[in-house]
Image (cartoon, rainbow, N blue to C red):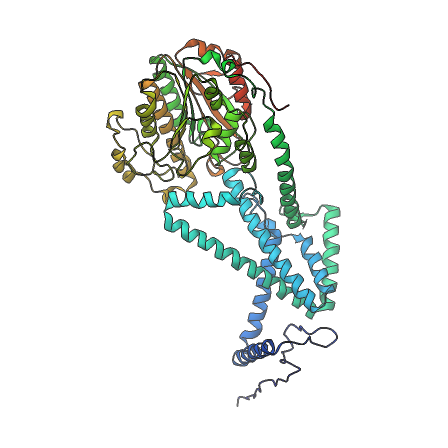
Length: 603
């Protein structure tokens, strides 16, 4: 006959809130006293205790299992946060089979504290681990897309750009839900990490003697492993990766703050800053000079086994077609100040002659009067200067710094066709609009233009295709092209397809530009075109260089003779061993090659 045991609810008094089971964590201070509590808080604790005890009575087997599972989960969260690397390449199982010294130090600290400070310290420790986890995840994303870690001083604004990019590529609803989901996940992570640390802290206090012995043993093992260099699965057993990550972030902040003042001084010093207009680029007087950036046109497009065959054929065919039209080219390599994105950093580096590799430097240089290559033409008073910026969809005060008299943004070129993901219009249309609005006009002065081509911007789906130049009209002809193209969601998550479609997008952009030059170029046209940066690491490959191709094309042989000592490769495809310069070196070399006389300023 089964034996039934009768349970009674534990009694409660004003001095003793509730009685806990022997297996519970003991949160009573060692002196046996409890701090006085307000009446409402005491009543709340009493109600919660009643419900907890009632649940334990109804589920006597599940209660200990749940407690153990909660403890295991708390330990996994804390250890996972302490051992989480900050790059996707390092995100492997062997990274989590190590002993973090921060766990040992944290355990010792919590064991030494009385209850109230212990709870506060554990909650702060857990929240700090949550913040570190968020920073590590941001580091992973920034390294994957921009080739560098997240900068807590400079990069918050780029998160807004990322949402805008997602909205353009995947739709506003996806971007909105992604933003909401990210915020919710961060809040939940911080809360769960704090609760996990508190749970472990109370468990340590409940088993103080055994916890102290365990901490001593762990510290001994950690130091022994450090001294002997013990490894498992190819990585050291003893680690301080969490504190190292915090140190790296701290150094990044300090370096950023120091760099601000140093770069401000550097930006004031300009080799050509005081050069009068009549002594700037005298050898290009009478020429229409066009500087064109092709989005994400990097060395990988020319040399990677997946993309290079198609891009190479396009460059060779375009070189031949241009030669038949009387144009010749020289090409080399420039090392971009940015990688995977932040195109404006590449633009400003190339045109200013300064190494603008972060947002703080960009703000500093654009707020000053450092001479840009485009502004040099404006300063002469002998050129009309315009910008064709299909990617600009809001106010762009930088136009003044670039020395552009007029700017055609995404809404100023009469385009009525569909967007192609992030790109507001196909490159072919943007170039035809430039021809119609500016290049074909009769004018008293030659033209200097800065043109940003955007069709090769990620996610590379859908990609426009070439149509008859006479058929472009207002761009509506691209409606059918966009509908027939790939969906961004089908390409963006597939590395192989991303690489293939990226290569096709570069082919399209180069074809659009070179066909425009064949069709509309004159004896006085000088075209300088280059990539602003390499594509993201998922496409260019881990450890890829930051090099981008650069070409100068002209009919007038004197234009190319002026750069003969640069030793660039003939044609549009630079040789593998062609000279490589930092992108910031181009401005001074270009100005010097075409007769500019240095007059330093700011020294």
